[in-house]
Image (cartoon, rainbow, N blue to C red; front, top):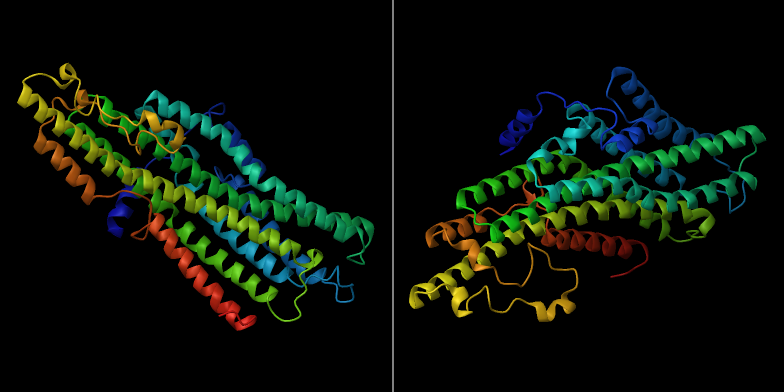
Length: 425
């Protein structure tokens, strides 16, 4: 299976897609250049790695060892700085390496599947373009509040006598620390938002696939081909992001448990002046992890909803075909059958926005099944039941059951750690 995934990736990485300056990715490309993560040419790649090394390794190291104030008062001593800096640098390094590999191997356009949008419907193209334009706003929605809080803390720490260095050096050190924090946080959230964006495209494709299945007089072969194409794209997404998701989960879990171990020990000082930066780091990690897991489980749930939709489509078509055979009249003439029965409209106000084309309680119109035989429909439903699609990590499906498993493991580890520190059993 691993060899097939590698071959699948290598087949699509033949020529890097070019793009003009004034395309739909202009804001993303500008953002990549300002963040120095653009590696489209050798000079940009060298600058990118230099900025990464400076802001992810050099500045945090100098900040921790050169600005350590052993003679400071309790408010200015940085007890949890080591865990904070090491956690943020580790996650930022993982994000930067993955982002560099994506950008270098595929290019931004092919990485976001924009080269495949010409094969999609106009609805999918328009919705994906709108979501693409919103991605930068979503990124800043998560980063800016944390950055404001971090800036407030750093300005207070430097201005209230946290160091004994001259004023100009104080200003430079404060700016470098804020740039380092902002860079590491944005790089991590950037990969999370890109993953969310790609998953959103697959959800649009699945919704469009559902409309083709139940609203268009399609043959089984075209439906099967479209589903195989969606499964192929989901495998590509899983192959590209599995390393990042797995190691992000490991790094963030280790960071959170190290933070819990330090803050639950005896005589731990939990005042906001000392533990606020650690808490801010943990909140940022949890927000990014929730973006990853929610996007993966959502697309897996939508992909598996196709099985339920196909079974309902098959049942409605069978009921209508039997009624037609018994009465020798079309179902619409007798005002019976799935197309004219209950459609869930009376309970629409209770459902809200939870129902869509893939997951709903409405009957399927019978006109969409007129040319497909019972055996073909049954074969298609059996195929859907035996080939569940979704985002996987080395063969493990990321669905709601996986989330329950992850939550159970994390809760068990947390209770074990609390039992060792504060005596919770």
